[in-house]
Image 1 (tube, rainbow, N blue to C red):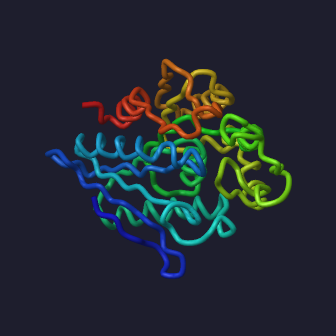
Image 2 (image 1 turned 90 degrees about the horizontal axis):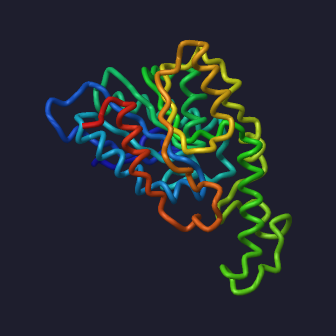
Image 3 (image 1 turned 30 degrees about the horizontal axis):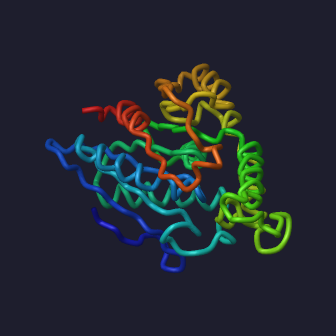
Length: 268
């Protein structure tokens, strides 16, 4: 693994390049796009496992942190959907320069899936896209995060007594489950409607979905009608993104990792 910073000197991004761990090495690679906020923390270990699986199959990998997240520069006041999509474009460019790959696949989880699709329509040159539990509806996604945040602050089992502060005011106003989400970023996310993106501009796409995934059917039908749907992989169990009791748990998803690897042709 090679960790380093890339992009502009004013606002560098943190990246992690992983070379193939098997011969013959492919001239293909997979760009991995994290979720945001609390879901980023929960899924970090699983992304590491996914990267290793892909590398053992002979693929290059590249992970990175968006502006205002992880080890990248800036704060969330500098972030937004367009900024993060530009980060994906820069990461794809850096990945190609570093690895020499000719074929680029992109995997995005949760909000990272929606950002990956949006960035791909702007022309990052991806040949294959895997959307893993995409948000699809940014408005519903933020409503659910807000409801979970309010419930967390009033959870007597968590704090010993209910928090005297309301997320509607004070220091919690711009937080969601312990992570800053300023109003401009929320407004950006609320405008996300992935099923409404032009499917003709999207590369071949695979869906990896937990049970009871809202909005996925509409997205699937639009991709299918445009001839862009490569496959749908339904997981046997429901993902626990909306479970307040799971927010401090590492997101362990071996079945989903298997499905993503199969979608990328790296299931050995």
